[in-house]
Length: 454
Ligand code: GLN
Image (cartoon, rainbow, N blue to C red; front, side):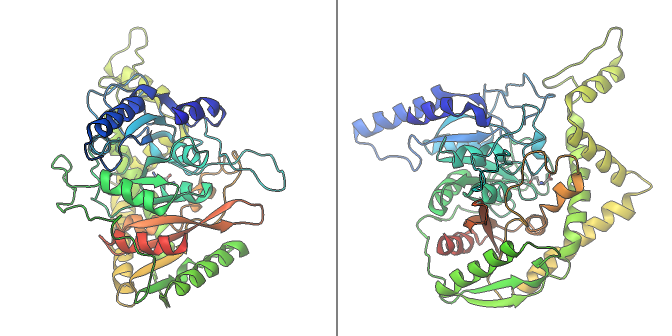
């Protein structure tokens, strides 16, 4: 109930698209009943969480913050949300996000941008971006509207918003969390993960969310490790790699300082720090911005005005006209840009030059990481090349926006677990995040290094 009251107070941040207090209260009541009966409590008993709107939730509007899915109330819930209910959690509501998870600032939402609860220390009053695409999740946690939320990460959408708002978030290894019932953006990259105030809460959430699901063909057929029980802030015997190619041109001095601070913290926790090379890093962003739109253009073909949500049927229109009118009206500008790029790079004349080439680059990036693991166990980098920027600052310039993903995209292309943890404040008093990247399936190593930093 306290969280419900907070949610009502904080409407101005525009974090929640739908509120479902009855769902959260039902979980709280079930917990009280279990306690009264003396039953053992579930791991997330009664915890009121926020659900990114990319997750389908049974009987509750699920729009992916788009116009084209307005009015869509799924008959089913995603596997990840079901796993959370099975663990005892309840839902406060559906969280705002970038439309179809495309964006880095939450400004592409059809329902308006989210405002970060953070302000610059110097009183500069420009509202700040909460990061994206899981910007509703990050802002809601940072504003204490909910203790934890789900996010999804295709190229950084859990980690970058976590960094911008001073919270933690982990993208697990590709395949750990089922994609079933999660609105698809780029299926070979999309991964769900938790966002929360600290590393331990992320570990508890991830344990509930993860697990094999026969309904997702890329789901990993593995037991879920006991990550929370395995938490250990000592890094004795661990080698932490510092990839020299992440020292990008024009990196602000304070991001460099943050990185040095992080290096000191992991050394203090007993790790040995080594420099490593990931030579194809600079090709990761261009490859990502070919592969992700290509898959998106295919995934978004299903929104045709027939099956879901919006239907625009002009007078006297035929089927083709209806498709065109629905899609013209229903998709936002960034989504249309991705569809155009995606269909172009997949078209017969350009497929080899773009999509095939990007897929080869992706393989080289994965190989870079494999090489790096010969000399280290984990990698430490900044999460983003800047602190939160002002709303509107980059929205007119897609390339500037895409560049913000420079540190998060390579590990997505390689399917590796990666986490952002708060690393301190910049000169304006805004949070900065450090990122730890691990080998496939080594979420434990990632969580432990983040625990040492936290
Ligand atoms: N900012 C990236 C994009 O716009 C990543 C988004 C995401 O991870 N969902 O594609």
